[in-house]
Amino acid sequence: MTGRPAGPRPLAVGAAAALAACLFIALFRFGRLGPLDFWAGLSMTVALITVLAFIIDRGYGRRLRDDLRTGLARKVLIGVASAALLYGLFAVGRAAAEALFPFAAGGIGRVYALGRDVPVLRLVLLIGLVVGPGEELFWRGFFQERAAAGTTPKSSFALTSLLYTSVHLASANPMLILAAAVCGLFWGWLYLRYRSPFLNVVSHTLWDLAVFVVFPF
Image (cartoon, rainbow, N blue to C red):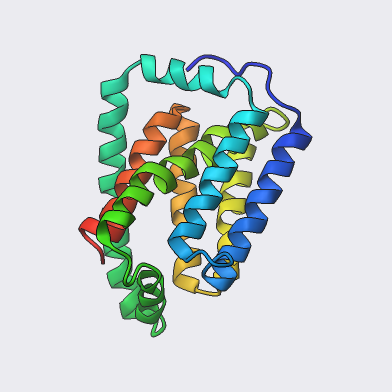
């Protein structure tokens, strides 16, 4: 991708992040949003903030088109490899956590309980079409990219990773919070390194599908 074009006002970017934080905090605190179960609430939240990102950042669509026009095969390969690497790290991390912390198994079980009784096809569609792509388009492709306009790329990476982790605190689940911290740092670094929303989307979506559908821990 090329240099950063002029973007939206920092206040608008901050307001979008604040709205996202409020919605995610409510979702993780109560495990649902009003009449919506967790996965429906998560999908609605992600869809809303992703649309908002495109409204605020009018150049976002062009950046995505440019991203898809260059090195697509390489980005897919890196996305797949990074998802596999992150899955491997979590597999090792789970074994270590369960050996060290008595609460680890229960915390992981509470994460998977959110998807209990959810039809597999529904889970695949929500993760593959909304949650995985949308989270990366908002958190990394929009917020991390645009927050850097007022700071530096590394500062924006740190800020985005911190905010991404912080919204999970409302879950009061140490294992979920730790997982969010690792994922936030990993995908934030991936975006810092390659500045490709598409690459991040591939990595995040495949990892989500592996963890929650194909090869759950």
